[in-house]
Image (cartoon, rainbow, N blue to C red):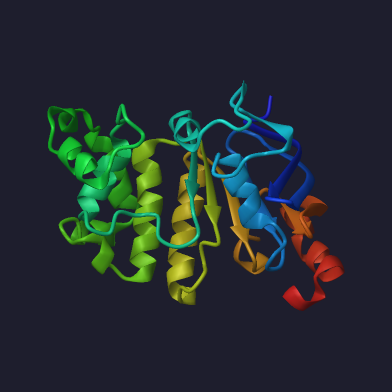
Amino acid sequence: MALLDVQDIYVSYGPYRVLFGVSFSIEEGQSLGVIGTNGAGKSTLVRAISGLLSITLGSIVFDGQRITNWPAWRIARYGLGHVAEGRSIFSTLSVRENLELAAVQSSDPADSQNRQRRLLHSRKRRFIDPDRMDEAYELFPRLKERSDQLAGTLSGGEQRMLALAKVVMAQYKLVMIDELSLGLSPAMVDEIYAALSRLNSSGRSLLLVEQHPDRIVELVDGVIVLSGGSVIGSGDSGDIKSLVERLFPSME
């Protein structure tokens, strides 16, 4: 049984339909790339899976449970993480507090940031597994050097590192990562993708959204190609180059 099974989903923004019958699956431990040009529907797809957008038709099953149109907080607690495009951190908390917060299960999904800060310093803090923190810092050593630094003062690449390190703390079974390389230097992207490879090797399943397929070719087990909100091609990692050449010559 697939860890994630997306079947024939349709998503609309008001009267405008954006996804048209998208289907794919991800096995446990597998990594899948989603590629396509701007406006292809890539971000809409992951937002719909994570519960940030409603699905008008179709179904999503994750880890044996139908999660179609569950609220986003419930999907995250069930083990499906989403690292959104841009900054997925609390900028006024320290690096360590961001990591600790990712491991804390609040009883109220509508908590404010002040409430979350108080929770960090409550007795629940002692239940945070120190091995998770060690794993997060081992993945990104420079975060350990900046553990007391406010997250909002980190560089753009370091903030993306922190967003991924939070994945370790939250212990997600599957992580969807949207446009990881956007706005980062090639050296920083290489460093982050090396960390992603280690995450995948540790058993975590990944769904990677990228506009530039050359960045994921070495990492993913398979790929789907979106255009105009529909899947127009799919294959294993060895097929990516031929798919790009055939479907998106301008993306080579």
